[in-house]
Length: 205
Ligand code: 5GP
Image 1 (cartoon, protein in one colour):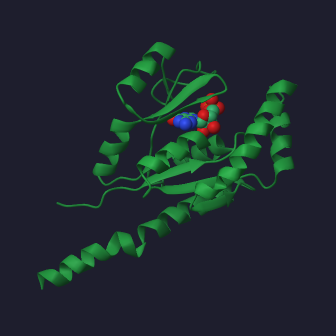
Image 2 (tube, rainbow, N blue to C red):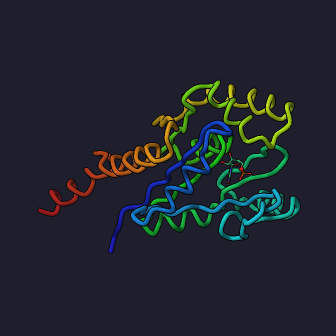
């Protein structure tokens, strides 16, 4: 049986905007049809994080080996650690006709766009920059220097909105999740994705 290849969905946006929270909400919902691609990282597991569920945790040596062997669809260094997407998982899952969902920072998203321009790029935006700053400070776990660095990074990241197909403002998690799911549904209805089937049908007549 021939089936359509799955979509590659990339959710990205500035640090502190709530990508992780939105992604977790998406995958806690039973009717979510897409597959989450679990990333590789060299950062240490946080309390409660499980290898193979939250991330695949690796040493720097192991990660650099993966880069060398071209096992990563994209990777980036973020606040001193590597993060990357396993390419075999992504390709296999899409070939099975399932949509794959990546939640990654913006540099990685830029790399995916070079390799998979046909992917669906969704930018999660903060309601405003000052709101973003409040959220980062509100975590209460970062030093002033780290906050300033993150803000500088965030300004750069906002400029990167250019490279995305859709912008979803993260005003409320639930409404952001609804919008993202709706975008995916709409993407499946794009003429370019569907017309080929009808053309074949007409040719077979
Ligand atoms: P955290 O350490 O808080 O889990 O993640 C830090 C940042 O890394 C977040 O912005 C997250 O979206 C990003 N990230 C997670 N996995 C990947 C990945 O596979 N590739 C890239 N480029 N970024 C990732």
